[in-house]
Image 1 (tube, helix red, strand yellow):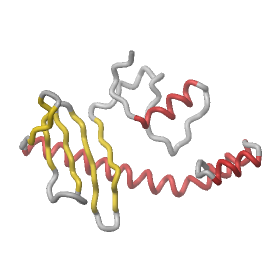
Image 2 (image 1 turned 30 degrees about the vertical axis):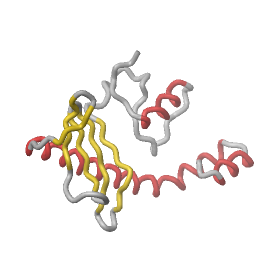
Image 3 (image 1 turned 180 degrees about the horizontal axis):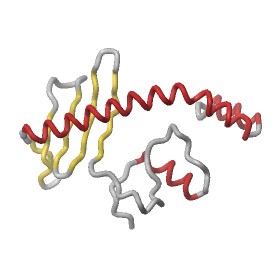
Image 4 (image 1 turned 60 degrees about the horizontal axis):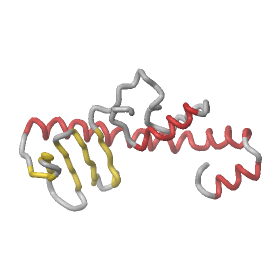
Length: 146
């Protein structure tokens, strides 16, 4: 049993490590086979990032706290405290500042990874096309995997 806090981002690096295939640059995450990695201290994720109008939906789990910024549904971020598996509103200016710093760092990271990904995709795609059977490569490309 692995007690480290991890996310679904760690699945691909772990699989790559276990079958001895190099992980592509576009994948974030850590291999769970890497004993030197101690896991995440808190989990930050987002599912809606609109850079053009500067609206974001970001959540941070930092037990017993849960931070939620959702510009699409409410005006101000909220902090909840998890008590008996229920969320209760929690007001704490210091925690708010901590989570806003994490949120800003996360958004910047996603923005940078997005720019890296779009610039590196064609390079990786060309490298993949030389390794795979042409029919397999075209099928994977048509399904959006490459």
